[in-house]
Length: 318
Image 1 (cartoon, one colour):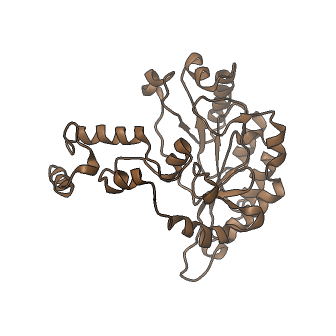
Image 2: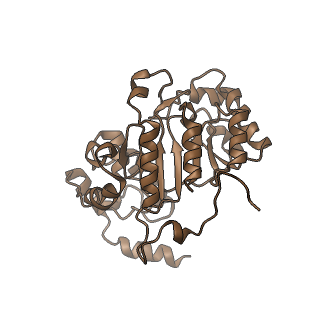
Image 3: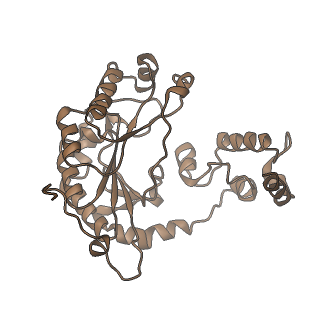
């Protein structure tokens, strides 16, 4: 008999029941902090760990618990705690235990440098029920710390990873291919990325995805609710239309959307707008298309008139 004080087994239909109505939220990302003890060259959410101004603006533990309670009421079954580095939060354990006792699966996205014996025992006794995601930026000290720009981070990360391994805490490794580690690609594990119903940042803003932080696409949960954002605010965002002439001339007519990663979030990060083409994404898609013989040399996809025939021919080839 299971006597774990933190786990109560219950059928999902008893937890969330609205007849035949599907839950409007099943997964949620929560950014516990923007602070990080690394300073990775590719990261856009890595404020210094001693940034007290940012720390004082963060959601309190009670505010985060309120958001998690509402998420549960909307059908949410899994939450990803991310950052910054989520283990920097002094109340991380409190939030983790609250989420698990509430019945949520918890996925933790961490660099593992702050992993301790105490935390690993916590994860062993109260399993997160989702594989932890551990960022690894290189398999050698030189390549790893060329990315993190923090002395000692390599040893700290692998000390944390070894703690997880020794205590059988399941995790997957995530990494970014960068100039300093590109020659080590064969040493990395492969993994898939998670998909959530939205992301709550460290200050209570709810956005459709982790990267989309345009002022017009974020919802302030301190003045509203997840339900209102999901049912009213986000649908209005999806109704937005591109107006940038260059986007309409190129991207709107391009048949390589399945190869291209152009999206409002990428446009926002690169240009501060929602509909400006990102040149390097376009170039990568075109190189792939020429390799697949969907395009000829010096052709641009938005100029091709017979693209449907080309796709059919490509599909018929198997």
